[in-house]
Length: 69
Image (tube, rainbow, N blue to C red; front, top):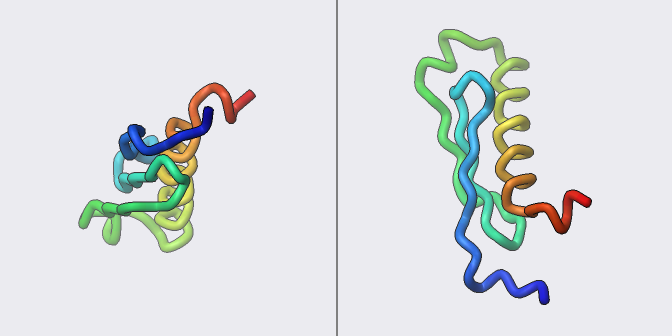
């Protein structure tokens, strides 16, 4: 059964903690939070990478072991 009605959104961050992404059970991005310090500490490319990492981590956690296999 693949019913996601009870599943809660999953939030995950990039390794440095600059970006947090929340992904819904259906795989859609629900929220993206960027720490204000990121604009001073990271280049544009590093910030983009941090966003991608946070979204991938949340998506992977949301998918669970069934999808990862």
